[in-house]
Length: 216
Image (cartoon, rainbow, N blue to C red):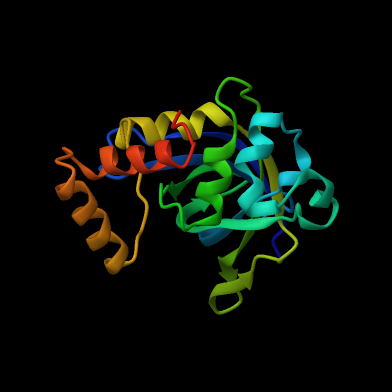
């Protein structure tokens, strides 16, 4: 039987990626001395919001997710961010592998709302929990043996907020994505055209100004 321990060494942007990706470098240690022929690794990455403090600016941005601060005792719960996989070549002792973490700026996604709300000036870190599972291929009595990675294998990592912001800025400079209903889009385009505005962004800014909201 194998025994695998996992630790996350770093999380950073994937260089030269076509889409916005982060890469987690993960150390895998086999502690019994067994030879691992291959490892089909799966990982769920979760955000643990209770593991950091929040400024007043961040509190306003998190209102949609967790409600007012006085309710955070019951609403500030761990939530999943993404799933990722990797095929790890054979090794003995330990190895370092990479997990690609696709990022989205879609504000329908809970993690995007949370990450966007974190104050760039305050900085700090995003508290992450990596939950590992998968299939281990080893040498068995009749050729290959197959084992499962226990579900209790996990590792925590504090990812600097700027890491996520930098990868989003490089792929979506000064822009973001917001999904709207078709009827809402049509009404917004009519509003824009009737007032001779140059784009939807200008139309939304004008509507926010009428509502007493100032875009920042």
